[in-house]
Length: 430
Image (cartoon, rainbow, N blue to C red; front, side, top):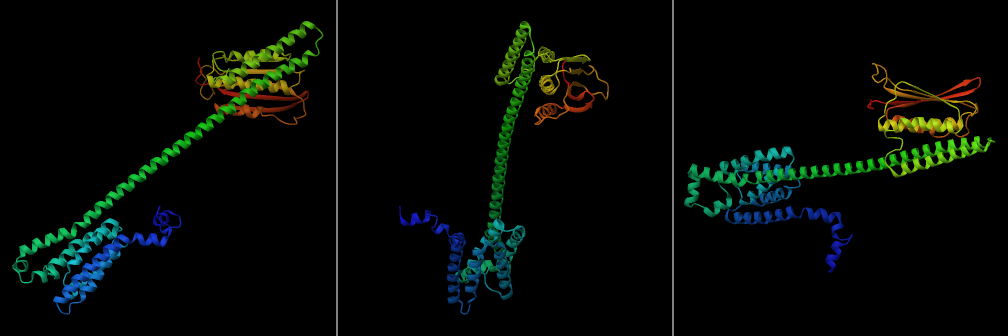
């Protein structure tokens, strides 16, 4: 690799120098201005040599070169310089130089890069420039005048209005063509910019959609994990509470037959718990759902009775099959309510369960809600560390539009703890 290529590609090369980049960005218009300046000075030298004392051509060449050099960076200033040259031509009768046709680059720059006011003024300047060049000066372009002199073509141009009209239209075409060309390029660039902006916006929207979907997927996975943890907690917690109650009652039994029956009940509860845990872990369907979801309420009550707890169950209204989501929530909440009643309630006092089903056709103003109420008597002393069962039940019910009500009442024989779950049953099969 050569030293020049290595320097250009290195971080500290000329491309990394801001001054170098700024100078290089001016290079195209700088070269164009230099070419115009050389051509204009050459034309001015010819005019000075053939017309004694005509030195204003050098200043004109310098002004034209300066305007061409600014047509991209400062099209408004370049257009102002064009107007100043036009006024000088009119005021002092200065001849038109052929080099001044390079000012069409200023019209191009005004249409291509100018602000909206510059765009409008440059459009109006095109016909006015033609008027100044060909009407006020009667076609006297200094270099052409020197070359043609008194030839028949020069005489025809000066004396024939038609010839002047043709020459004016030709000049108009030459002067005016760059402006629409610049406008077309401006519109094309605007179209490309709009297209790029639209593509960028679409890409940003697609990226936002992908991020949203990713966030939703993560939230869904976390929700599934939370639901799985709650289900395992409910299943294991309830089974352990029942097993613990049965084991505690078994130590007071003297009859071997009753003791064996209690141990058999413990084994049945443990086996049922393991089966429920397997279903929760291996299936996306909650074992609490299905056609037997309502009947499993009675199985929970029977399991509590089998553990030796006294339980009073009352069912009001006509039972109906719950929808899958409501049935799963109702079962898990009821299971947790019974678990809490076993864990925290007094064994010498019964657990009271009441299920109140809504009417098949509820009247206006009456909620279509299943009310499940579990009441037990607890010791007056509060727990040292409250659990998460109530919060879990509340979140489950809120997920389907229900709610949980918890009340404590101080009674002479103990503290009554009542938990009421309200489960919407709309949409259930009749």
